[in-house]
Image (tube, rainbow, N blue to C red; front, side):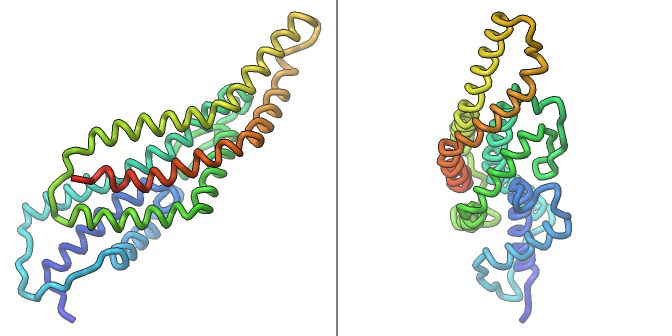
Length: 253
């Protein structure tokens, strides 16, 4: 089988777009995943996801300058598509940070290699649980399907989408609101705990409220998180499904 230069160029363009997408999805291209694995995954997805139409061996190749511009366009398109995943997992990180802000876990922060950011142990618990839910509802399959559909909507070496700004603004506001909604039950429980401790300090001044409050707030935060998962789980499901839908919405002409 003879592979023309034009065919190889199209394959590299597809590989470029896919790599620009998966580096934004922690499950596929997180910083804790070795670079060789990410490159191998991108190559395999380019082979599997793209329905190739064989070109004749004498098909005209793209010129060097035009090909450089095409590569830059595919990187921009892939980054725009992957931004949806960044928003979704950023909303989860924001919700975890808001929950842990007054829980007593903020005194010790650890680095999360999946998201490339530091956070408290409470943040890590929430992010890991959300990632497990992402895999449980086959969110990774939805991402792959959306990735495949982007090549049908916006072919390789095509024009850039110019109407994605409005969709990005709406999606960003929606994801921020979702993150705040997920954090509200735990935040409300911690506020009530602070009010109770404040009243206790007024009623019984001899009680060391500061030292008493640290373990109490830790326990309340964990109990509130466990009880609020009945509300958080549907929000996470909607969040991840919207992420896959917005990957396509961002590139619609």
